[in-house]
Figure 1 (cartoon, rainbow over the protein chains, first blue to last red):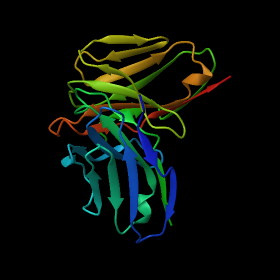
Figure 2: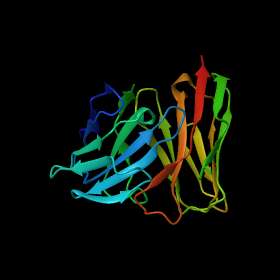
Figure 3: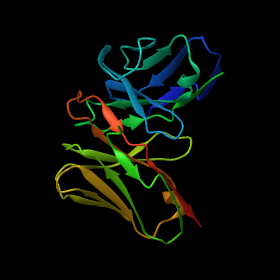
Figure 4: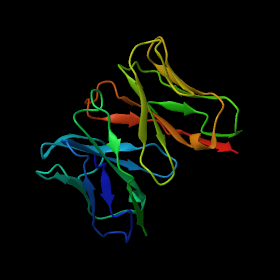
Length: 114
Length: 113
């Protein structure tokens, strides 16, 4: 059973640039959630995708967008990067919502915006 | 205001000691989850508690859900260096979609050999 894999592991970008982060979900999982974890904080929900549609969104601006592909892998895109976007971005896959299906997290992408 | 308040924020103890960390809220939850996150890795689910007053054990870890389902505790007996990590509690925010898990800020535990 292959776990959740994320790429790249680390990334440095300049303010104003755009970034794409990638996630391969665990085999058999059809739902992908993205979380942002700032230094010293717990993860904060960005959005969830189920069967290629956005299923729910947290309190993040529209410059945070995503995609889910037919193989259930996913991308997180962030436009017009700001310094406060520096964080660990975590992808989690599951068979459903967190109240009935455990989340399996990847090891994250560490994004630094300078 | 944080939905889930975790305490203490940091904890450094010697190997073999016991410890308890707390997760408190003013909201009532249908369930609550505990995760451990090691440096450079994503959170790993340890347990989900569902029933008020429920106690679950995972080897040396004991999890308790408050009777009113507003708070939870994690007790570790005879801590080992392998227990080092960030302990996070998480729950579905009442009134929010069931897709949205809200996390506390975590308790960072260091177990010194």
